[in-house]
Image (cartoon, rainbow, N blue to C red):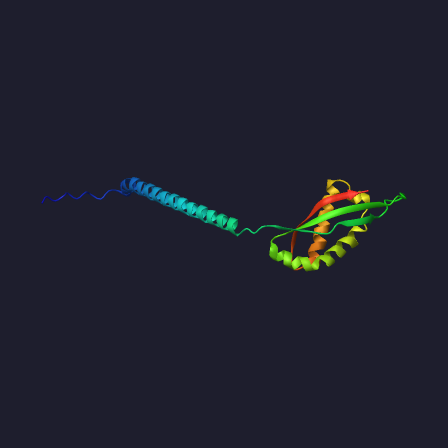
Length: 168
């Protein structure tokens, strides 16, 4: 075997220049491999998350119980006078309560006298102007929902729905 001739030690500047391209190439290769690993891993994680969300959505659709609507009896109210008007005004209101499921209906139905009493007491103080316009009815709906939920606690009513609102 032939011996390779030994190179003379190079000066510090020459050795640094020769090793610099090699180390840059190594860094670029390592960086590229790392990016591919992260990108591939990220795609894998994203696919797994999407699959998990799809399974959760599917499970929610299967577990969704039918909403129950519970009608209250018709309320006929003598409204408070609007000031100088001598003429009495009446309101006829039909309301339905939206409940999450039949279990909640079983909890709320025995409390119907309390609910009706709460609504009657509050609505007797209303004026005709409190029932005019969509904004007024929206505020009334929110107030009735708050009062019904207080009367039915711990059961929860999801919404108060107006079936008829007639002011005469």
